[in-house]
Length: 417
Image 1 (cartoon, rainbow, N blue to C red):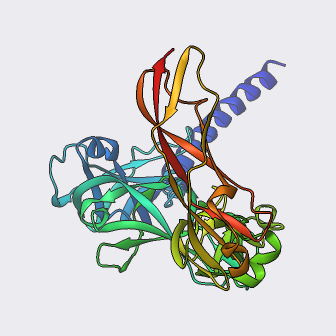
Image 2 (image 1 turned 180 degrees about the vertical axis):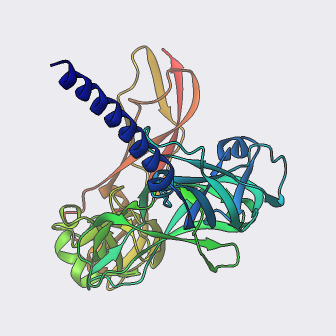
């Protein structure tokens, strides 16, 4: 029994010795040194925010990579790749624009169970990193639009509107300062309705050339663009002829010629605004105040929701009276009405020359006794002295083919009773 125990102890010692020998083999033989190359390791730049705060930026050299020859223990070496090796360049110390050549820092991102202490870089390419620093600029660039397609017949394109109306651009100053505006191009055919949609844009220089925006930072890559499409309509211009001065409504066609220049204008608006709009009246013309051939100018009235596409703001109206006779008749039949209470009114005007118009036979039959000149004091100033007041002419010729032309006044004297 004692001898068996003795042999068991011996085997335990031998097992421990063998374990130590195996562990030593693994540590010194199986995990021996290896060498190799790690390629295409990207260069990471840090401190860019610090550069930006100084109005600077890296413009050339950002997209670089390096190649490293590395020696180290197998367990660490086998973990090396472009993802586990970091190459870093710190640019936070740069104070001004220029070209710089700088050494880079190498670090490893290995699993916690693997040590990087055995790794040694035996060669590296390139040895240093060269990059360019330039001034950084921020500008707000206005948005403009251009239409290269077509609008359907009978329609008109309005003015572009954009959201946003400007683009904030950041980048190398020498490039940013070349930009004049951002151009949105709408290419649609036969537009008959308002266009709304998001469109890209192109930066345009001050000499009208497109600018490559590569490397520039923008706050919007698309612009919400609206182009109103409105309908066109040709509208006839008219005037309202008010009968008078010996011309009745039935006589206008035979005795009055009215020519309007321009005869029509082109207007634009929405379908609803243009619905039923075929004629546009310039205003009234009282024929009793037209003595012969006259040319009158009218401002073309247009509702605020419509646009005068023709661009003509005024129209001329030429009026001609034909086939009628004009005569002057003297009347002494003057009377006053609506005298103010407590005052006396006397007509200082004793006779009036009244112009009448009508057919020759009817005009020749009118006498002064058929004409009454009525002065109305209702709106006269309540004060003593001479005043000029309007007079209404009443013609009792017995013929509807004769009328009075023009406006008349008389002078009265007002005194207290």
